[in-house]
Amino acid sequence: MTETILTGAGSGAPRTIERTPRRAPLIGSYQERCQSFTWNEAREWLDGMPDGCLNIAHEAVDRHASAGLADQVALRFLDRTLPTQELTYAELRDLTDAFAIALRTLGVRPGERVCTLLDRSPALYVTALGALKNGSVYCPLFPAFGPEPVRERLELGSVRVLVTDAEAYEHKIAPNRDSLTSLEFVLIVGDRSLATEPSAPLPTGTLPWSETMAAATSVLHRDGFTIAATRPEDPALLHFTSGTTGRPKGAVHVHQAVVAHHATTRFALDLRPGDIFWCTADPGWVTGTSYGIIGPLTCGVTVVTDAADFDAGRWYRILEEQHVTVFYTAPTALRMLMRKGTELAHGHNLSALRHIVSVGEPLNPEAVVWGLEAFGLPIHDTWWQTETGAIMISNYPGMPIRPGSMGRPMPGIEIAVLERGDDGRAAVVDGKVTVVAQPGVDGELALRPGWPSMFRTYLDNPERYAKAFVDGWYLTGDVARVDGDGYVWFVGRADDVIKSAGHLIGPFEVESALMEHPAVAEVGVIGKPDPLAGEIVKAFVTLQTGYEPDERLRRELIMFGRRRLGSVAPREIAFDQALPHTRSGKVMRRLLKARELGLPEGDLSTMEPSP
Ligand code: 6R9
Image (cartoon, rainbow, N blue to C red; front, side, top):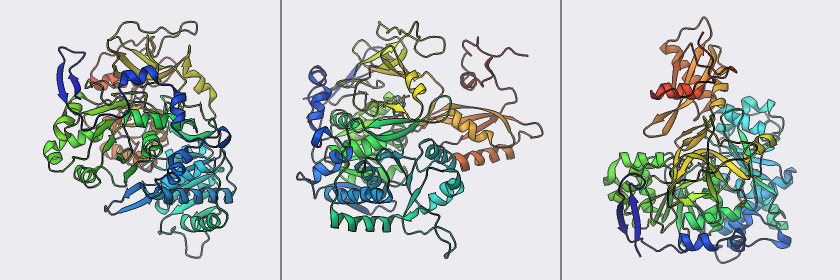
């Protein structure tokens, strides 16, 4: 069987590359699957629990632990210095049972929120899956966030339990602990004790992870454990994401999201028994949870996770030494590998690698073709969002790839491109939208709701949730076009959110943090194109009178942003005493971006007239 890759499709004559896949996909051809697939069929691939109950952690862990995979490695942790720590499916079952018992002992009820602010370490995975076993809602926080994004999310989520380490506690939690009235318990992982006076008691509700787990393990050995009888529609996951305006939005997913996690992991990632899978996304972002924890564990494979940051040599070493078979990563990382050339790849034995997949930002066609040169494998792009919970569009294994295209809708997914209005979003007339009929024409990408991992609400914000749906479609905020063969091509965002190194950043959150500095009178934040990260965060700042726009102040503002925001802080700051405004007084980010790019300034009818 050969796989066809068409390059340059959509622009000029396609070049065809044929190759023989290392193993034919098990999942059936794209056409066959699309014709026959139903979500009810996918439900049958899972175990379920008595009385119609369903729990993600049961599907990810317990069913394998009691069905022949007890001694198989579920998670293999590589720490910064590379020695490994492993947990088998049976060990993971026991640890997650114990953590669920710990939560019950603390009186944490189903539906209440449990967060992690941790590096990629065993405690993170145990917390995530243990919280689900207790019926609690798991909410991951990205460990590179600064104190402000962490505080904001803990507050918005009314989070009751946080699992973190001593360093993160001291820098990011302790300064705001008093104002976080819902946060009752903080479990501290690791040996490093808190830098309190030796005699000073820990703040109430601050508990060492190891002792809490030891006590819960004794209870487990004595009494055993029964997983919470969660219903398919019970909330399970809370993922914060960002929009153009306002505070972060908490997308709520339910236990039956696991049906989509499992099916799409099989379809798009082609996972099968015996695979060694590495997803490089941090579980603080949705990819690292849906496909770094849940999807692959439901397939019973071994998941490799690395605590260190990107390093090309280290990554090739991991791919080789761990015999990784399926690799899910992001375009920024692939571009960083590309910069090191193909020689570094060729210096490693990567013969175990069978399938490479990408997500999170546009994957340039060169990267797809480079994959062929470096790995002997093309890179398969996938598209989805925090809200969709699972992959919606993909270059399905075995399907001809068009480099530069995100692929075609997954089985069970219906998409449309909608005509746009003046604001760039889908045009709505009397509650109706118009589907673009001809191939190749841009519009807002929309999805027909109905798959199991679709978000069920934005936490405490039903109005914002309702606004995401029009005329039976979910509006994605992305602009795309579809070619004559049904391949979807990403054009851009219809709004002002920023994607930097695959991470979604809300400009409002960054602006609000900078506004706290006494020198700042007003600020507008945009994503500035960057050859490596896709975009970087750039802030345009108007100073209060009495402040000089000099290099010292610029550096101070950069540091101020970094201390508060961590990884989402602006990398560049420009001073601008005349920021453009709409008539209603909002900073026009769109115009700031057009000016930054040297593009035509477009329709400025809503802009404030010049004085
Ligand atoms: C999974 C994830 C969602 C936004 C999405 C789009 C961008 C994701 C992409 C892509 C071009 C791809 N995006 N995949 N853009 N090509 N293959 O990333 O979720 O953080 O919510 O971001 O990311 O703009 O709307 P999330």
